[in-house]
Amino acid sequence: MSESTVQPLAGVKVLELGNMIAAPFCTRILAEFGADVVKVEDPQGGDQLRQWRKMYQGTSLWWLAQARNKQSVAIDMRAAEGQEIVRALARGCDIVVENFRPGTLERWGVGWEALRALNPGLIMVRLSGYGQSGPYKDRPGFGVIGEAMGGMRYITGYADRPPVRMGISIGDSIAALYGAIGALVALHHRKVNGGTGQMIDLALYEAVFGVMESMVPEFDVLGYVRERAGNALPGIVPTNTYPTRDGKHVIIGANGNAIFKRLMHVIGRADLADDPGLGHNEGRVARCEEIDGVIGAWTGAHDLEHVLAVLEQAAVPSGKIYDVRDIMTDPHYAARGMIEQFTLPDGQGVKLPAIVPKLSATPGTTRWLGPKLGEHTDTVLASLGYDQERRDRLRAAGVIG
Image: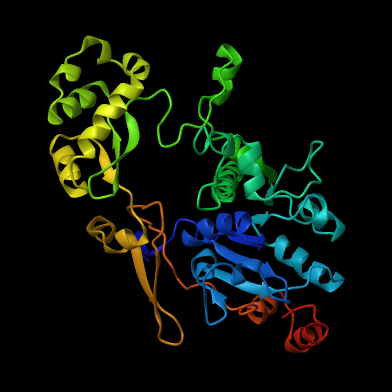
């Protein structure tokens, strides 16, 4: 078998005890690069994300990507025999990923200590609102709460308006990425350094807090509290969104000293390009409103495509604001293979985002789309030694689906 046909996480066994976004996105990343992911779902409806946002024939279109390459096993983890199955699955796993409220899995006999006793080499990623310890640990917490507590919401929006959220569940997604990194770091330590298994305690608010740049040292040393600044990037000038004559907007990032000079020359303001007070970022920050006004006046006098063409010729970083229609028709997206085409069982075509990041020798692949609820229950349980008679009994009792 050639290197290109062997996925980098082939042979890594992952058990997902997750729902909605954080844990499922974490395991999706692992599955995209070849990990064998078994996803446990409640037989009564399965993962709630199956019913979120836009639907096609009773299933969320989001589900097709979020659960790709995973095996769906429907198990009632509240039932003693369901818990027994989970323990049997965990015994043969490398990684377990879960996002229940702290204490829930312990009540069901499948918490960290119980599973580690069965499998000392186990790596367990635990995603929760506030973490497994601390005074807030028992509070329910979704990604939106993590975004608020982590500091992101406070600085998002305009100064004269209430804080706003991004249009996606960014807190959950950041936590999922950290979870995948933590799992792979722990796996490397176990395999290369001879380490044991370990538990990764990942709070949603801490994941958000981890990407908050210079917020802490600026406050600690200078007492500076960063506030909402709309589309500008505070302290880095010019970086903003500017209107164009045809009612559209262009983002311009000309905060490098040489780039700023090129921008000023190309918009006909050589005086500002050669102004020694604007030759460095500190001087530009002090005159931010003036600079933004000059740039906005120029963009407002031209249509978007003209603005983009002029700035590209001058090597000034800029771009239009894409909606999904722009993405689906953009030649660069196409050339990079960022949209993949699939066919649903009824013949309906469907496009999904391609896999990120791109590995040159062992890229991730989509082997199958999000499965039906319990599609792999019989196959997985048969691999654990559950014969047909036993599976039929468990199914009749509602333990499996």
